[in-house]
Length: 494
Image (tube, rainbow, N blue to C red):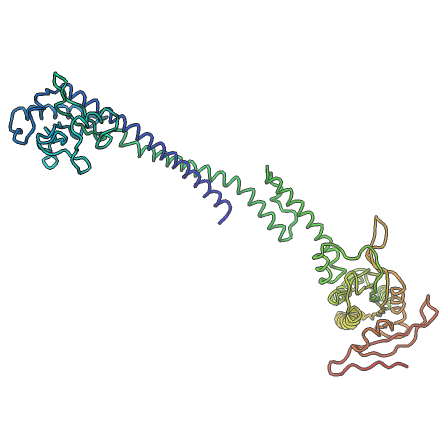
């Protein structure tokens, strides 16, 4: 469920609960006040009828046999006239009757005359007056005393009682009146009216909820789209440029800052991706910082690779062709180097300098360097075969490899620096690459690298080479790619 839908449901729930509670409170309060008003009307009608009735008529009707007397018909006609005159839009008398004391026991109350027309509901003179299914045993005086209170003694809010007294003030009977809501009474319409207002408030609340949910959800949706865009590599999502306010503006600013940081990191990652292997790059990104780029002394393996006779070959080619050859050459070489955990230090015209074992330590750096060199020569043979079919000249490549201690790190000034390695280890690797042409070998390896991986490859002693800057000759070794069916050959030392 979306946040927008949750917010919409929450607001609707609040509207329904709050307005429902208010509607219920208003209904019960209004209903209670109207019931009081109906009861007052019932008391007024009962009191008026009691004041105008002849007490002797009430006293005369006490038994069922009295219903045959003219006084019974006269009193019943009077009560029916009162009933009919008070059946109006605002008030509706359901029944009106007289109550008298039972001859046998003054505590028991009996019906006198009942104005009811329906035979099945008519009470006859002498029938016991019941309340909640039980005879009333408080007598006329008890009913009269309780009826003085607004709602003290009533069979529902619409019932009221008024005493009938003779000229001496003696209580001879009671007029009882029972009202029901009239056809157009407010009591009949208060519930539907409140329900209609409640429904209107709910509809209005739904409209407001939809508007608020949209106003809140729209910025959140834009922020979500922005985060998704950043996650997909778009560090400048257009949704972040939309105007926002309040907390959403703060969140948008935070996402912009995050996107800027990710964009910077992505730029660095793409910048390094062409120089170091993906495994090394992923390790650097995961660590959150470039390891040991401040400059340190560590053991590395350095490779120099250079195209032989490239200058002479380039003189007979168009500039575009030269660039295309170099592009294909470096594409193939870089792919092999990075796959073997090498780091591209720099391109040297038609050559390349590679470091193994930096910026991250690599305990198999010598093995990775040798395998990379063998695969680079194999890759070059494939390229030369392709170029020959296209009518281009073949080229050869010399590789020199040396292992040892060197200083690696950011070298240069604050304005411009590059990650590289310096030291005698680097110089010797460069000299060995130059000596490979004189020795007629494709790969020349120093004894420092040779001793680290001697059992892993097929070796041949290449001789002692006197390089510039050293007084003692350097023992060198060469290797060739092994046939898959032959075991490694132990090195031959002269």
